[in-house]
Image (cartoon, rainbow, N blue to C red; front, top):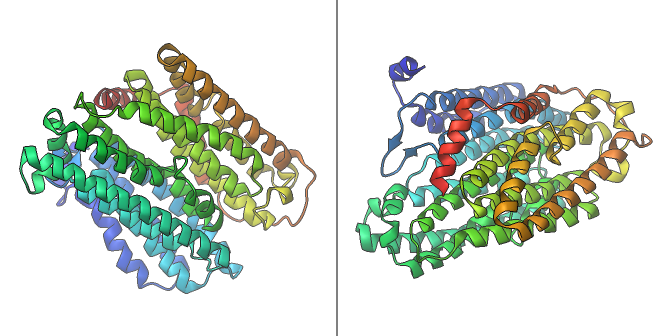
Length: 486
């Protein structure tokens, strides 16, 4: 693979950014849905190939771009889920076109914005410049806002506006925090681009003004915490999931929340290098637990299947945030594994939920029942997804939660009681819902599912394998990044 990388006219990191950028104008110009959907899959596949090639490429550190142990696997994960979601999206959105929920014009716009979102997330992941990272997350936010409102119903437009307003407030606060970081770093590093380079800031973290650094982190925490979906900054997330197309729900939960948390952890590493700065770990533990417990209780009150799993996303991002707040080799390892497993399993669940909603013609849980009778293959996929996401063995989510609880009991025993309480509450809520959906008396319409189940079962298979065995290369990566996070 190294020979192939060396023979490429452009570096893999350039290709990861270039393929989505080329795809946007191409997809805008194409009105034929089948061609547009096929090209969307093709460009997503090329981005995945470029991401895989990054694994064999040399690590780089420049003023604007960085490829290191922290982000390289997340780039591959993002490209993989983006590719499988594009495959799922091709059939899902085709059904929406056939039923008249979307017009060809909106579909052309949808595919272009999909590539814009993927490219922006990749930009945020490879950025060494903290301002460029902010730009990537801002563009990703704007692209998803427009896709959330693509159905143009009053509810969809309201959800898009709520997402836009709250997302803009959050990203605005993150921008102010970024400015403060530049101010405090430029006094030590000097003005200009080097003062915005993340690796330079980390290298000089001990010399930075701890008061300004702490203030900057508070703004960054609220700003990027809004994008992560942490309570109490989560209000946009359930509406965006419920009213937007289901493939976008899969990408929001599986990828965009990860990218925002990644940005937050980059800044946490800066504070970790300054012994007089605010204790970022304690704040992350608090927000993580609040998000977990809040979402666990809210799961019992949901009446919409997509809102149900939106709150599940808040729960799991709270778990990952709590893990990184504890810190240390094992907790950070658990947090990285949980981010990865959540991306795969939650996107798989939304694939299943999209099929369910189209087959039943509704998202209301009260009208969805008896899947084991009407759609047995879909029922198996949905049930396995729920079993995986609640943390039951042998799936990978169980392994990440087991590692987290194990290390938390030795370091934060009181907080671990709250952690386990939240996990059990969420497990009870989702298994309760699963019984009705699976084994209740079939109600309402029951159309056949025409779309492929391949993306759904591929994700679940990977999560299953990860719960039983992790490749040594992946374990080494997790351990290396866990050590970097401190």
